[in-house]
Image 1 (cartoon, helix red, strand yellow):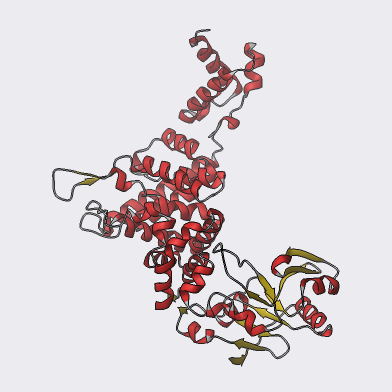
Image 2: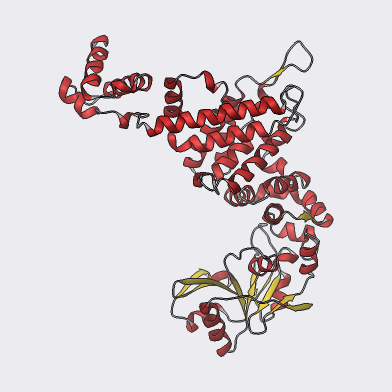
Amino acid sequence: MKTFPLEIALKPSVQFLYDRFRAAGYELYIVGGFVRDRLLNRPGGDIDFATSARPAEMIRLFERVVRTGIKYGTCTILIGTDSYEVTTYRTEGRYEDRRRPSKVDFGTDLLADLERRDFTINAFAYDIARGEVIDAFLGQEDLHSKCIRTIGNAEDRFNEDALRMMRAARLVGELNFSLDIECLLGMKACAKQLSQVSAERLRDELSKLLLSDHPVAGLRALEKGTLLSYLLPELVKTQGVMQNAFHAHDVYEHTLAVVDAVAKYKRTLATKDILKNNITLLLAALLHDIGKPQTRKEGELEGQVSFLNHEQEGAKMSQVILKRLKFSKRDIETVVLLVREHMIYNTSKWSDGGVRRWLNRVGIENKDRLIALVRADRVGRGVTERMTEVAREKENADLEHFERRIDDLIASQTAFKISDLKIGGTELMEVFSLSPSPLIGEVLQHLLEKVLEDPALNTDKKLLAEAEIFLKSKVF
């Protein structure tokens, strides 16, 4: 076991927490990722604590305690506006469901508690009084070598909790580290156990991986550990699917390049808050070409390849995949839309009415995400004899011009949806003595289509006149 000094500026509430435990005769240490991140000079997240006190004793010591996971020794202690998770030292029995130990015994030894953790870089403890890091498993060496290594035998750790394999890949993405060879071999040996992990837990880890600073590194770790075959078998099927002369990579490598481009955008586009930490954009990047293997056709000439309607097929597949992983209905709808609409070309030839109809179809709230996906898709194609730097610059210039047209049209306060029309269903029913029925929706949709083509029609008088013409054309 090693110890070494580390100065950490802590809130007064942390000191209060520590003093209360120590005054009562109990140990209290900061543990886990917070210590690791401070050693890496990364912003620290939530602070977790380990203690020799039992849950009942924590409840006795503090006025406000939430019994977060009392069966497993975890309480959340509230001090002022701050909250801290504190867990009793534990030793664990067998993991019969590959998720949680079948039996948890509370302990009195910090080192025994640290030994049950997943990776060496997550097994640090911080002695608040001494200002020292306790490194029982050479985690500091692994930080220096940028290595993810399990505590003890990798297969044992992954068989205990199969989600640890996803966590390893996520740490690769967050820290841009590499998997230790034993860790990688353990993942390969235990990959099939991933099928026994709940969809919700897989969803959460995949989301954290994609939102990390280096998601492609994390995806590569999943690939090398053969976890992708169990998590996203549809993505594995894109490997080796060659594309046309405008692409430098197969579909899989292109997909990773697009994810990488999106990850870079979300770090740099400070003015586009909607793109930051937005899981839907990253999921769309990951799934945007998922339909290509099913739609690939070869032409008569060598190298002639097409993927007609792959965006439609991909949208259907994306819905199935995201439902399987228990993403929210709202996220699924957004990703499906982005995948379905990502093929945007020749926008310089679109009329203003065409741009307005496009905005009506995709929604103003999605236009920034969709433009970012299209731009990343083009970056991900790479440079070839057919897709030269000059050609790509022209495409990007056209896309920037398209963005400016969109912004100008939005600024003009043109109607893009039915609620933007100057009249609504109530006025239609009053003026034309109509009862509530689907016909009202038909009329409003017709009026919107007219206004999308000619915004000057969006006045009460002109819309009522157009509605009268439409109603007369209907057979009652």
